[in-house]
Image (cartoon, rainbow, N blue to C red; front, side, top):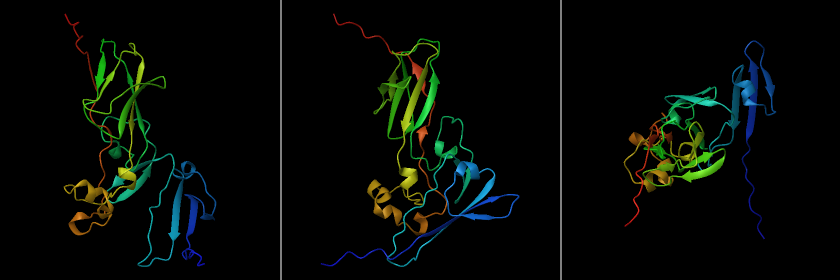
Length: 221
């Protein structure tokens, strides 16, 4: 019986946390990025033997922080406290793959529904006090407001996806079919179809929701 061959590569990681006014101190222990990002400098060094048969996976830095893109460079920033309507990949969350909650206070005008004209995400749902009241999986993306009163808070949750976290974020070809752009070939682009600058997809509620009243249906004679 032949035993499976064990992986021959080894990974070496090194993290340093440096106070700006103190000498460098090396540490191999994990620490909170929220403690380091504003008052320290962080170095991460990952080394593995690299050959033609080596498959590399992405390396992720996780924590409660934002990111500002400057071309091909990402700058760690404070986590945004609020988000406007629009592409949240441009507002400090370029690689975020989770969900986003938008809080809306119901106006005093008696509206019966709210329409989300333009959003990008996997699904949109509405909550009141943590309870699901409606969902909008298909156009025209409308949410009924029958369960809400004036001044109450409606939460619109946009479910994210992995396109900006695991997708081909350096592929510049936007006109080929989805199989090519999102399949294995999408990660093997070159020449004019490749850029070091990040090529991200828009995410979130991209246009402000519209409140309106639906006409009452007349009883059939």
